[in-house]
Length: 475
Image 1: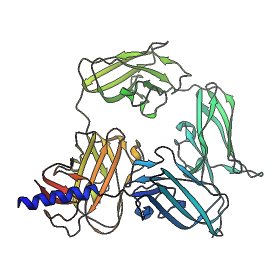
Image 2: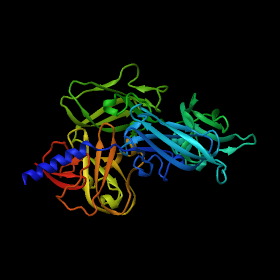
Image 3: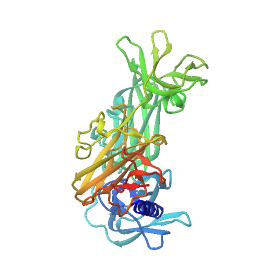
C-alpha cells in the first residue's frame, strides 16, 4: 500500500510539472467569438499552438465598421497575467467590411498582435449611431458615468455633428468630466482621456457639449446664467494606508456622509501599526481648488499604540471647520462570495457562511464548493467584505465592478475552487468537471491542489488532498 501511495504522489507531481498554460483573447465582442465582452474565461477564444511557442486564434466572418477595437491576451482564463499587462491592444479597421481576424502570440520573442483580412463586403445595414454624454458629477448628468442614460443622448445637427445642451444647471466651482459614448456601450467612447470642463465659480449654467463623428473631437462650453447657493460635499484625502489611494481629493469611496446634526463622517476599517503617523485632510467638493481642513499647510495626524485592525471614523463639522477622528479596535475583516444560487445555494447573499473564504496564509483566501450539479451556462459572483455590499470586488479586482463569470461548458457535476488575492483584489475561478469520478481514485491532477478546507496546498503536502476534484492520499 505504501508503494501505491508513493506512485500516486509521483504521478501528481509529474502532471503538475507538465501543466500547459492556456492563452485566451479577451476584448470587445465585435472582434471575437461568442457574446461575452472582455471575458477571460471564454474558451471559444482560446488560442492553439503546435510547438508550445507560437499561439494563434482565427475569428472568421466578422462584420466590422471602420474604427478601433480593443483586445488583449490573458493566461489561464484569469486577469493575473495579460498581454499587455496594463492597457489594451487596438485593432484598427480602416474600411467597413467583413473580416477574418488572426491573433498571434510568440512567447520566445515576447510579441503579440492581430491582423484583419478582408473577406467580403459588410453584410446588413449600418444603423445610425447613437451618441450619449456620460460623466460626473451625478447631480449634473442624473447618473454617474452611465452610457445607457438616454436623457443624455445627443441630437444630430444639419452639418452632421452632434450636440447636447443642458440648461440652467446648478454647478459648484470645480470641474465637470465627461466622455461621448457610442451606441450606449463603453466599447467605443471619446476622447481617450476624460474631457474636463472647468467651472470658475458656483452658479447656474447653460452647458453645451458637441461631438464630430468624423474627427472624433469633443468640446464643451459653459455659460453662467445666474447665482446659486450650493450645498457642499466633503471628502477625506490622505495616506494610502488609511484610504486606499494616495491624497486623492475626489475618490468616490472617500466621500463623507452627512449626519443629522450637520456634521460629516467617513468610516474605514484599516490595519494600523505602531510608529507610523497617519495624515489626512478634509477637502471641499472633491477638489484642491476649494478650502481644505485643517486650513493651511498642516495635516490632521494620529497614531496608535498597538498594531492591529481598527475602525476609524474621520469627522468634520463645517460650522466651525473642526476636524477630528474616532478610533476603535476591531476584528480582522473577512471575505465571502455572493452570487448565483445554483452555485452558492443562497441568492446573492454576502453573509452566506458556506461561501466564506478561508485565509491561506500567503495573501490569498480560498474556498472550494463541491458536488455541484450545474447546467451549461454562465453563473456569476462577487467578493464581499465583512458580509456587506458596501465594499465588494468584481471582474479584474475592480471595486463595484462587473460580476465575475463562472462559465460551465456542459451539463455535469462540478467542483469549483475560488481564490481571492488580497493585494490585487482579483478572484480566480478554477472549474473542475467531476462527473462520474469516484472519491479516493486518482487518474489525473490539476496543477493546483487543495486541502479538505479548500485552501491551496503546497506541492510537497501530504495527507488527504483534493486534486482535480478528487480525493487522493499522498504519503
